[in-house]
Image (tube, rainbow, N blue to C red; front, side):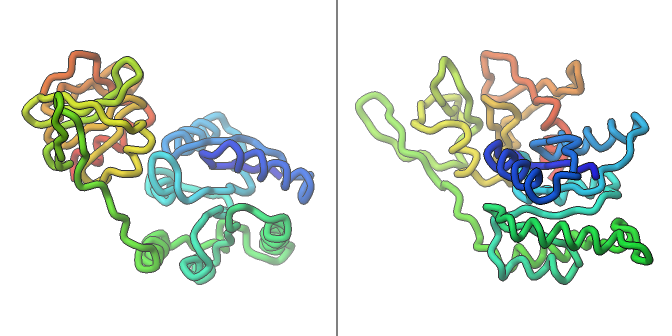
Length: 265
């Protein structure tokens, strides 16, 4: 049995792999992908290469580039899907309604054994094929999770230094955040530059994704800071920002599609 693991936490990958070796040694890890974009590419390349679909995809819900449900909007998934998630039991009722199994993180061996048994029940003689038995209603799942999950609170302002003074700058005044010589800065709409004592990963969690997008490891932009974008080699995008940034501004290949979707919202 071939499986694909979609997970952006290396520790979680190692634990799941170890549990699979103990629980279902006949399962072979065919691939490991950390993001929506990488998973879509893997499935398409695997299919184009004439390789069989994985029997099971262990799919984390929250990935670095968004919720993994987006994968189903971009490519047809024929494999049986078992979700791994940190959502609580109450929110997970949606998965039961839609005949989708799940593993609550951190994954426990008895839960994995249950999921494996369910998989074998689906492919038993006289039963429907896994992909036929599985009816994935993504919109229903998202609606349920949205109703059960608390609304996130995003950062409304940052306290920064300007000479000997301290200023409170609202996030609506910020054009973009960027890394320069190991420090994190932002520029406001007037082009003023301020240092902030946060890493980019932390800012990713603080900022409203409706208004901010991380285009690469060292840059987070707003809609109105992007005045031009054009194709760049290797399926990337080159941006022109306002206020101007005195360094090359490239959207990574993995994020280019999502960035274009975000810019169109």
